[in-house]
Length: 217
Image 1: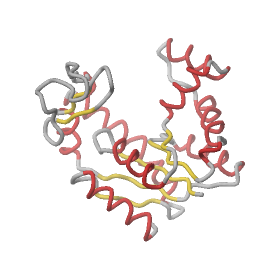
Image 2 (image 1 turned 180 degrees about the vertical axis):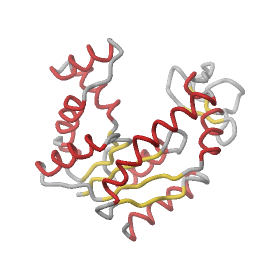
Image 3 (image 1 turned 120 degrees about the horizontal axis):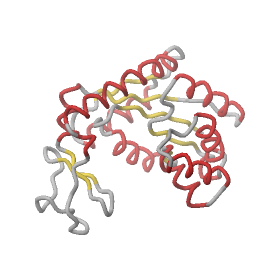
């Protein structure tokens, strides 16, 4: 049973690598966004609260986020382990997660940080397109669609998100780094953090992550 944390700035490929790694290890990939949407769809008490908060355009409070995460980690498919994608975002959340895991008889076993230079991150974000229908993501530099401007799966016109524009992308990356560095230090003090070069194709980066997990950090 292993609890893994995966960190990476916007444009680092964290979402892609998280999916690949979760499939490889046979454990679920957990993100707060997915968990919130699942609770809303279920119509649970916490889901109704989350829906009200998101409709108002507010951030979900830490105590609600931790409650949702605790419920999710207690489900049967998480018994072999879980991969947390982009959480915790603050030291306070990290401390709360430690308490939740301790209550479940578990702990954070490994933390992987995908390290990618700022120019590469900005380039990736500025060239990113997504399908508003199926959610598939493309990149003009590394993974362009077969037909210009159209989704390969359903032909829908691809969309460039406003927050992927260069100025906004730089701001998003800086905010992420400001928040994440203290969290990484929280785990680095326990010898859990492995930094992985996030440049290269998906298979190469995956191999680096697997090596970091196998040799320990």
